[in-house]
Image (cartoon, rainbow, N blue to C red; front, top):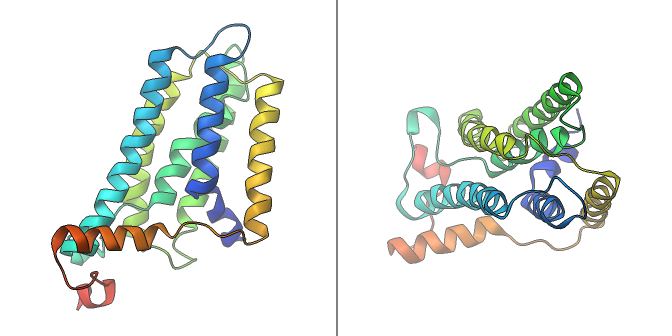
Length: 208
């Protein structure tokens, strides 16, 4: 299984711009139905709130060593959260709501992809299973709320082309090793600054 390729599908560099582009297109596209202004804000709040919880869990660990040692659980897996936030809803939007069976099948296919992306964090050594499961739980809750927001909507051809083009550009940039922000370092610095610790907590020492 190409775990390194799959894990990219939960990377914020790909997922967040893709979600923003799709949500804005559903809001401003010509014709109806459109995503309401309140729906757009609700969707943005779901994404921002989920990412804030991921960041808070990591900052708390680096600064104060929070977590459950018995479960080897220090934080939410951000890739797992984003995968579940994005792919079931995006796959659902590929099928018009009137095709209920096909739309359900597309949603389940997106869920299957999200599950694979989440699990890819284990064989790639990024997270233990406990942190992946925590991320799945958070992402799934946000996913269900997102599916309710978009239940009467679907992407037209131009929206699909926009999303596919953006995803392709990000994938090409990743393949060419374009420099990307080191968010873990930012979280570690924030944890140290807020807690007053001398250095970030390390998982190896934390478990001893």
